Length: 333
Image 1 (cartoon, one colour):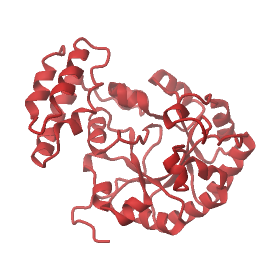
Image 2: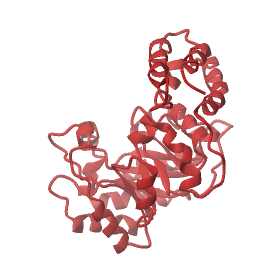
Image 3: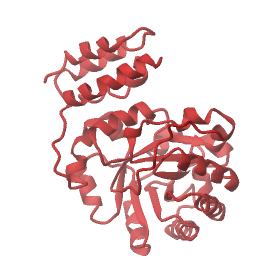
């Protein structure tokens, strides 16, 4: 592969104490740049990208990111060890801090491609995938999974899966504390209907204290995060961090024990303005960026008008930075 000359340097080992989940159609590079303005230490994840897309598609489009996004992990979907190894090396060469294997997505499209949650039924194959990736990269190779699949959801099966994959070189497991139902539920329903079982994740950490066990699923605030961190190594927050991004404002102080002043919502937008103008100049449509900031003023005076103005005026081909400035005028400083 020919890589561009401005490849970013890897920023080193990162902490999983607080992560923002990989979310399809949500956590793109614009979203991650915005989130990084709010928290300097939260670990950010890309959307899942399949090995086929990287190998046969425009790999630079999928792999490019802003240097400010570090610490940053790339999530891969696939089940072919040599292909995953090739893609993991591409991810490392582009400067990511971690490569993550998706063993948790339950969508039909993922099942048909033989990756995602259905791979929990093949722990030996997942171990082969992880071993192949670990053999060619020096950055951490991590796995994101469920607690089980369909009727294969006993704790014993989860522990066996973890043991086999850990023996292949994975030291960090991000576990959505729900099982996946591969038939009859949509991906959205799979995030909500199967019951959360935190106790199984706690038990896994007790049985494998040498591993980093990160919990995903149902986390909506930092009080809950701090409580979970008493028993686990990290927490991954998904939809709440996206829909109410100002949740991230206290992460650095409360979760990473720093003493920096949290930025106000308006300060965050002022910092985002130059990025928006730069992206507009490169041909990016305004809505590609502003769709990620709709929830910034969640619960604040003027929030509804902020969302409405951006939603109605940022979609045009000629929409410019003034749309954002006008929307800000609806909010209270």
